[in-house]
Length: 249
Image: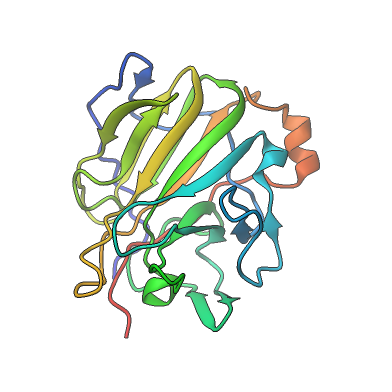
């Protein structure tokens, strides 16, 4: 079980004219990942589905997120803001989602928040105790964004994680697989909407494991979406954790 050796394997592709691949994250970037842990309110749910103490409304940060259908046999994934350094248990009806302080797979840096997807089956049951980090999400920004930096943690399977659409246009800018704990970046300009795919689900239900991937999102300071003052008022400012998927139980 390896921890936090962030080798940056860099993507070398472009999307339809408005994607620029970066060799490193922006030096003075403002994270759009909430700096509090909890479930992210998704448009398709209308409300948080777990007992999370924090139901995070990202519209306060200038964007909304919708979970989309990824693959047959799976439901629409949940999404959390999560710090790898802390263990969390969420309940969803009779189901439990358990995040460990150190997951069975790889882990990002301590004391950072990352978007952490949770794959569910068609009945809404979280897979692998909530530790299958797979999902397809659409981000809609209040304003057009330049220099939107996406950080993908632990992409180990080629051709699954990355950007599917930008501003409604299919781009299929999918990342190559890299070594354990690799970190890859995509930077986009002129973005109003985008669809981001995270992880490889495996073959459900016969093979439940897959390639789990976490996501961080940032913009250059000062933010191009909302002012840094508004972000501070919203009380959600940071970058955070993720993990690679492994078989549980």
